[in-house]
Amino acid sequence: MQKHLSKNDVKILGLSSLGGTLEFYDFIIFVFFANFISQHFFPHDLSEFWKVLNTYGTFAAGYLARPLGGIVMAHFGDKFGRKNMFVLSILLMVLPTFLLAFLPGFESIGYAAPVLLLLIRIFQGIAIGGELPGAWVFVTEHAPENKKGIYLGVLTACVVGGILLGSVVSLIMNVLYTQEELHAWAWRVPFFLGGIFGIISLYLRRFLQETPVFKQIQQEKSIENFPLKEVLKSAKFEVFVSMLITWVLTGCVVIFILIMPNFVQSTLEISTLERIYLQMLGIVFACFGCIFSGYLSDKFGIFVICSFFAFLLGISSFCYFNVFYALKPSLQNVVIFYLMTCFSAGITNFCPLIMSGLFDTKVRFSGLSFSYNIAYAIAGGFTPQLLTILHSYALENLEHWSRFFLSFYVLFLAFIALLVACLVRKRLG
Image (cartoon, rainbow, N blue to C red; front, side, top):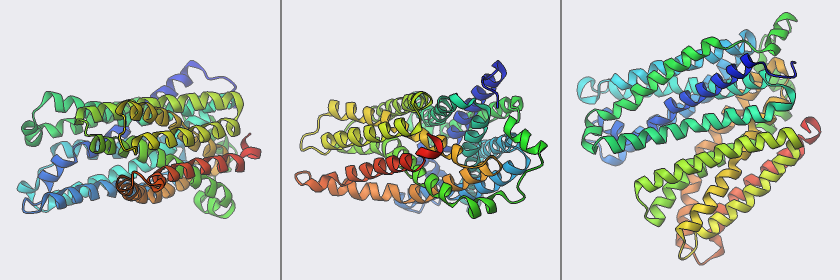
């Protein structure tokens, strides 16, 4: 493995990160305009509740398709190369996104509209299931040994930046257009932009080069015939640990990036714009946390810095929930501790850093993708419901210690991260 990145490698890694940002924008922009989609693609005689529920169910279908896409694409990535699957994932994303920008609604094509909408989300889910694991593997195998942390940190931050880009576009659309214009036609603009972004990503990935590690196993003719079978046979510990650290990543993203800003808005009665600004700031702090944790792990080792961020996550989140569920919460204190907690969510960078180091090169893509996608689908499935229950219970018991149940859950996630750091200490340092 080369010790230093050439200018061409830096260019390739930069393009990979930008491509990840644009592809995650395509996947997440759906949720920002879910209300408008529900009004166009489902029967008008349905109640608003069922329209929204069907829309979010369609959105969830993308998450359920992630494991399938991740496993299949990883299989071929371990057999035929990382670059080929990297390009395929963006193609599977850009075509459905463009289609959604022009897809007729229920009034024009009847029940074919929600069926096509569901198929679009399934294809997007398949694409995203292979995108992030593929990007992590690609960057890992291009980066020098002493800079894997910082490069994975930059990549993960850019992927999270795709959510930020979605927030920015949503904000701009709400400023430029009235609600009537958004309902009539303007909601399609972000998906058209997503298609343009996808074409740009597809063009950029033409310049990617296959990883030197994969080229080596090709030359040695040591490619596994069925990589996932080998993973399940000989890498059970690696899969178990990878699923644990993915659980931590899922909790940080779902709780603090996606859901808590909505809880802050409803509980403290701030405006929608203020909620969007808070969410955008949280994403920015999380991105800095990813980069900083990666930089420090290159300097001091995975065990030390992962343990440090686990403690930081536990302490900052406990302080946040303490001020948020107070009898008279201060918005200023809530924002301060929220941003501190988002920064500590930089612990998510240890998910790719640990997983990419655990699996053997010949099955790395399959092992990482299987562990990540299965764990994310499970944890991502129950976390929002658990969060809603614990949040409601806390609001009803503000004078009782049980209001900290949600805090205890995050403390448990911090403990899981600390446990993982201990389990991989000898393997990864």
